[in-house]
Image 1 (cartoon, one colour):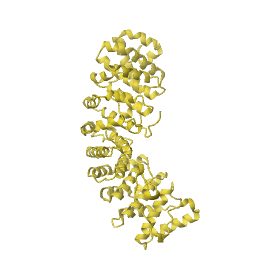
Image 2 (tube, one colour):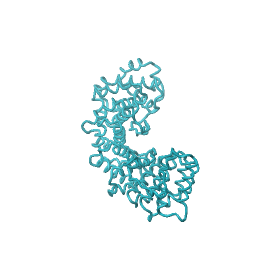
Image 3 (cartoon, one colour):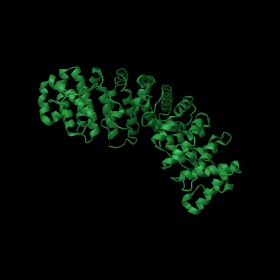
Image 4 (cartoon, helix red, strand yellow):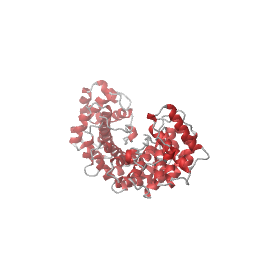
Length: 492
């Protein structure tokens, strides 16, 4: 998501992401600045005003004061208008970049130049963003992030965040720089003192990581993990920082974001690093229990990504006191995203060894809750619940417990078969049903009657009666296997 930095809003000054504020730069009165008040001026007057300040900026005889006034004018112009005017001259971009790069210029002027570029990046004209990138803006911004005054640094971080939110090509251009490592290094050096600076930095990192395939290297991932979590703990009273931090950490726990050649050994090490961060899992579970949907959804995603690791890593989370009731409670949320995240987590618990599955099958209240969810008007939730049953039944086949089967299996088989027969469900789920159901009917023929009640056609869908059995090994499912993250996870 791109964010345009607004112009002056009274005595508080301009605002940015989640209320980010900066001091207002006052312009010299002698240049007659009108604060780009386009709504109160004719087109002819606007063109004359634009030409006047453009000439001031491009003239070889322009003074520093004239340059400051001109940059301030264009910053305001691009803030108050959705798009740059049709007579916008792209050579101004080169001038803005040169000013940002000029270490002899005043910090306020350099910041205004970066600010003007940042708001140009919010244009819906995709080629304009590409033009800004092609002119070398990214290299200048990243350099400033690592070396410049905090005010200019924060503005450049904001600009990079907008570039990465533009399109896949722009995001890849950002990822090709070392901006994530640079931001993480600055954060770990405690260079971000204000709430607003931390908020902007984490928001930028989130924009860069979103979408997967970030090709992270081990050093960058570990440094960013430490930086973001440290900021989250220090500023946990701020809900917006907590939300973006949890989302960022969840992406750092997603194996799709690692370079493919380091993924097999780096990703488990990254999960270990998260588990070894003091209080990370506890804080995340606290966010889940907060009841705030803006925190619950990303916190569930983070926990869910962590437990897709090895069985040993999963156990360090799910065996905590109160874990299952906490996740089960989320399945009763009024927010669809929260319900599905919770069911997905339980399906991966059921994909573990027998003592993990026992957390589900020995909990009668949870089983009853899962069965009720199959009657919801939410196909994606129904599918997640069926994955819980399918993985649980698969485990019961390999670890027979007749007493548990007699109390649980009939309802489970009927529910899974019925759902598979009435919906165009995930092919992997149908294959899992084939695997589980066939084995169950061989070992427990008393359940033939249950299947017959679900109709002969349903049974054929499930894979018996001569249909070839497709073996599907039990495995945990990544977040991408079931749902794309919904940035506005508030739907019911």
